[in-house]
Image: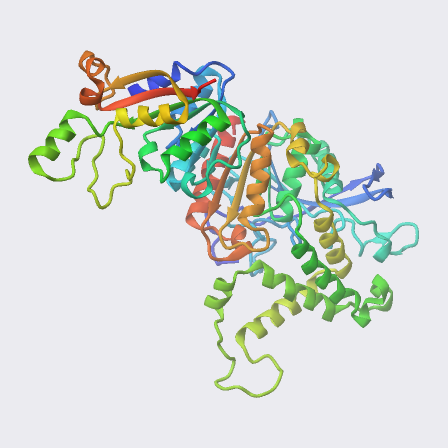
Length: 382
Length: 199
């Protein structure tokens, strides 16, 4: 944390755990008898409970979206650039709810939680969770918080998928869905990258069929590789080029296979850090949730038919150099919304950072986000 | 509101689904939504205009008519397709007109008249490309690459089997003048056409 708290920071925040006793039925056919959700909130819920905004996290995200947990924190929450006083998701006007999704590894019930039936971590017994399951659990959280209708459900990437799913599953419970750098379904290429990541993890000798907790080890190498390949898909060729080029760590080639190029050591560092803080089973689960997401599937592949159930307004944003979920994927979604006569606004923001651009406050992105959320706030009296 | 928009809004009925090609800052669509109970989308490419639309609750899609066309809109999905002061700036106005009347049952088009007497006079006297209030650019930087006269436009409509339901001719301030009504191709500066497919 900087020495003095920036004026546009939500400040020091602390997460809260909500325990749910009622069983939740999942898409896979299994039932979770009870579970915890870890949640952070910023701002104040108004008397009419009309100013609530739900933040949905992406693959490796969690509940800590803004502010600092302590003065010692090196970095703020993962979306601090967009959440805070005077920021697009203005905590002076909105009551912001951010949770760690079911199956996560940051405190909500997931594969590394204790299975009450066995007294051991769930591991591979933890059910595969879908985007629809997350939305269902988020709706139960909304009930608990006294929120009947969100002013907006907002998310980037996998988070955007949750926002879209919300609009289909609970059309009366949100006014706006903000879907950023997302897609209505993964392409074969997207699934292929996920498969490489999963193979990296499951083929690690320390994986032990997902029961590594029992062996007091983690498949660190596999998780590191998974993250490295994932990380490449989050950046663009241009942004990697600008950041690293062909720069060497030392002056000359060493004619060996250690990390000589800067980009190699960067990826290794990112992978290693990630493997120390993330659970491998959660990574498998999150990538599978991505693969399965396809709300048009039940409608013969016609997303506009799926959208017939929706009634909220949409803001869809894409980024010019995002090759993971390209602007064309967002446009596919927008065209289905147009065909379904849903109210939608769309822009493709010129930004060099690839998929990661949704986390970086470029001027146009911020302007659009500000303008749209300001209107949402005015509409709900926030 | 601009007087040409004032005229156009009278043709929009409650419940109409409207597509506005080059919707600018969304003034017209905003008015049509709030005052006439219409719904619809605007297409725009100017980033500042797009942001303004989003801030005022006008559904706006970033889409370039020249490069992307209207292929993402279904046949007959709009009651009215609008294009104010943009026909002269697209690469293929003829194709845009076809597309307008494919996706909408009626089109409303406005554009500046290149046969207005002041432009004719300017060209005759100075021998230089004319400039006016409606066409304030130099020949080398003008976005208006497909200038035409009222007669040209009407000839194109005849050739394409497009029926002109009505035409209103106004001057540079969008005022209705009896002179412009009398001799439109010489004295009218801007025309507002309501067009539809010949049935």
